[in-house]
Length: 145
Image (cartoon, rainbow, N blue to C red; front, side, top):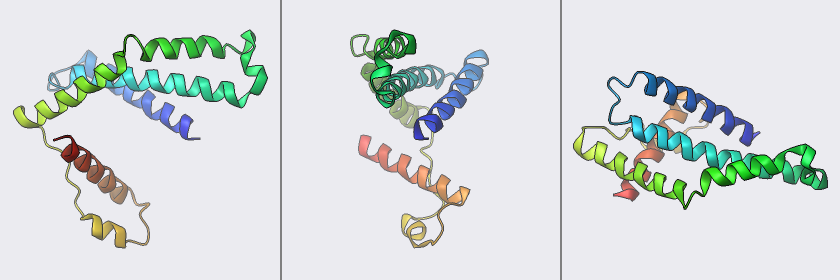
Protein backbone atom coordinates (compact mmCIF):
# COMPACT_ATOMS: atom_id res chain seq x y z
CA UNK A 1 0.00 0.00 0.00
CA UNK A 2 2.76 2.56 0.71
CA UNK A 3 4.14 2.19 -2.83
CA UNK A 4 0.70 2.75 -4.30
CA UNK A 5 0.11 5.77 -2.04
CA UNK A 6 3.50 7.24 -3.01
CA UNK A 7 2.80 6.62 -6.70
CA UNK A 8 -0.57 8.36 -6.47
CA UNK A 9 0.96 11.31 -4.59
CA UNK A 10 3.71 11.60 -7.20
CA UNK A 11 1.08 11.54 -9.93
CA UNK A 12 -0.67 14.47 -8.25
CA UNK A 13 2.69 16.27 -7.97
CA UNK A 14 3.37 15.56 -11.66
CA UNK A 15 0.02 17.11 -12.60
CA UNK A 16 0.87 20.16 -10.48
CA UNK A 17 4.31 20.41 -12.12
CA UNK A 18 2.72 20.20 -15.57
CA UNK A 19 0.24 22.96 -14.68
CA UNK A 20 3.01 25.21 -13.32
CA UNK A 21 5.11 24.53 -16.43
CA UNK A 22 2.21 25.51 -18.70
CA UNK A 23 1.42 28.71 -16.76
CA UNK A 24 4.44 29.69 -14.62
CA UNK A 25 3.16 33.18 -13.79
CA UNK A 26 3.99 33.89 -10.14
CA UNK A 27 6.05 30.71 -9.76
CA UNK A 28 9.07 31.57 -11.90
CA UNK A 29 11.50 31.02 -9.03
CA UNK A 30 9.98 27.61 -8.27
CA UNK A 31 9.52 26.21 -11.78
CA UNK A 32 12.95 24.62 -12.22
CA UNK A 33 12.93 23.18 -8.69
CA UNK A 34 9.47 21.68 -9.18
CA UNK A 35 10.59 19.99 -12.41
CA UNK A 36 13.78 18.69 -10.78
CA UNK A 37 11.86 17.39 -7.76
CA UNK A 38 9.32 15.47 -9.81
CA UNK A 39 12.01 14.02 -12.08
CA UNK A 40 14.10 12.68 -9.21
CA UNK A 41 11.20 11.43 -7.11
CA UNK A 42 9.51 9.64 -10.02
CA UNK A 43 12.77 7.99 -11.08
CA UNK A 44 13.45 6.69 -7.57
CA UNK A 45 9.85 5.56 -7.23
CA UNK A 46 9.88 3.70 -10.56
CA UNK A 47 13.02 1.85 -9.58
CA UNK A 48 11.63 0.99 -6.12
CA UNK A 49 8.26 -0.20 -7.46
CA UNK A 50 9.79 -2.31 -10.23
CA UNK A 51 12.32 -3.99 -7.91
CA UNK A 52 9.69 -4.62 -5.20
CA UNK A 53 7.21 -6.09 -7.69
CA UNK A 54 9.91 -8.33 -9.20
CA UNK A 55 10.89 -9.56 -5.74
CA UNK A 56 7.27 -10.27 -4.78
CA UNK A 57 6.78 -12.38 -7.91
CA UNK A 58 9.69 -14.66 -7.02
CA UNK A 59 11.28 -16.53 -9.90
CA UNK A 60 8.49 -15.55 -12.27
CA UNK A 61 9.63 -11.94 -11.96
CA UNK A 62 12.82 -12.82 -13.84
CA UNK A 63 10.93 -13.97 -16.95
CA UNK A 64 11.00 -11.64 -19.95
CA UNK A 65 7.21 -11.76 -20.20
CA UNK A 66 6.90 -9.98 -16.83
CA UNK A 67 8.66 -6.88 -18.28
CA UNK A 68 10.10 -6.07 -14.83
CA UNK A 69 13.60 -6.07 -16.25
CA UNK A 70 12.56 -3.33 -18.70
CA UNK A 71 11.12 -1.18 -15.93
CA UNK A 72 14.12 -1.79 -13.66
CA UNK A 73 16.40 -0.69 -16.51
CA UNK A 74 14.28 2.43 -17.08
CA UNK A 75 14.30 3.25 -13.39
CA UNK A 76 18.04 2.71 -13.16
CA UNK A 77 18.61 4.94 -16.19
CA UNK A 78 16.43 7.65 -14.67
CA UNK A 79 18.34 7.79 -11.40
CA UNK A 80 21.95 7.13 -12.29
CA UNK A 81 22.86 9.27 -15.27
CA UNK A 82 26.25 10.01 -13.69
CA UNK A 83 24.64 10.65 -10.32
CA UNK A 84 22.02 12.88 -11.89
CA UNK A 85 19.41 12.53 -9.12
CA UNK A 86 21.84 13.36 -6.33
CA UNK A 87 23.06 16.42 -8.23
CA UNK A 88 19.49 17.55 -8.86
CA UNK A 89 18.51 17.11 -5.21
CA UNK A 90 21.55 19.15 -4.16
CA UNK A 91 20.45 21.86 -6.59
CA UNK A 92 16.89 21.76 -5.23
CA UNK A 93 18.20 22.22 -1.68
CA UNK A 94 20.36 25.15 -2.76
CA UNK A 95 17.47 26.76 -4.65
CA UNK A 96 15.13 26.31 -1.67
CA UNK A 97 17.57 28.01 0.67
CA UNK A 98 18.14 30.82 -1.87
CA UNK A 99 14.39 31.35 -2.31
CA UNK A 100 13.91 31.61 1.46
CA UNK A 101 16.83 33.98 1.97
CA UNK A 102 16.60 36.20 -1.12
CA UNK A 103 13.12 35.94 -2.58
CA UNK A 104 11.02 36.19 0.57
CA UNK A 105 9.73 32.62 0.59
CA UNK A 106 8.54 31.52 4.02
CA UNK A 107 9.23 28.17 5.64
CA UNK A 108 5.84 26.84 6.81
CA UNK A 109 5.23 27.38 10.53
CA UNK A 110 3.02 25.01 12.49
CA UNK A 111 0.15 26.63 14.37
CA UNK A 112 0.69 24.40 17.42
CA UNK A 113 3.81 23.59 19.39
CA UNK A 114 5.03 20.02 19.16
CA UNK A 115 4.30 19.59 22.89
CA UNK A 116 0.65 20.46 22.23
CA UNK A 117 0.48 17.92 19.42
CA UNK A 118 2.15 15.19 21.49
CA UNK A 119 -0.44 15.71 24.24
CA UNK A 120 -3.35 15.03 21.86
CA UNK A 121 -5.10 11.68 22.08
CA UNK A 122 -6.06 11.73 18.38
CA UNK A 123 -3.62 13.09 15.81
CA UNK A 124 -5.57 11.93 12.76
CA UNK A 125 -7.28 15.29 12.25
CA UNK A 126 -6.24 16.95 9.00
CA UNK A 127 -5.10 20.19 10.65
CA UNK A 128 -2.96 18.24 13.14
CA UNK A 129 -1.35 16.21 10.36
CA UNK A 130 -0.69 19.41 8.43
CA UNK A 131 0.94 20.92 11.53
CA UNK A 132 3.16 17.84 11.84
CA UNK A 133 4.26 18.19 8.21
CA UNK A 134 4.99 21.89 8.72
CA UNK A 135 6.94 21.12 11.89
CA UNK A 136 8.98 18.50 10.02
CA UNK A 137 9.70 20.86 7.13
CA UNK A 138 10.76 23.58 9.54
CA UNK A 139 13.05 21.16 11.42
CA UNK A 140 14.58 19.88 8.18
CA UNK A 141 15.20 23.43 6.98
CA UNK A 142 16.89 24.31 10.27
CA UNK A 143 19.16 21.28 9.92
CA UNK A 144 20.11 22.43 6.41
CA UNK A 145 21.13 25.87 7.53
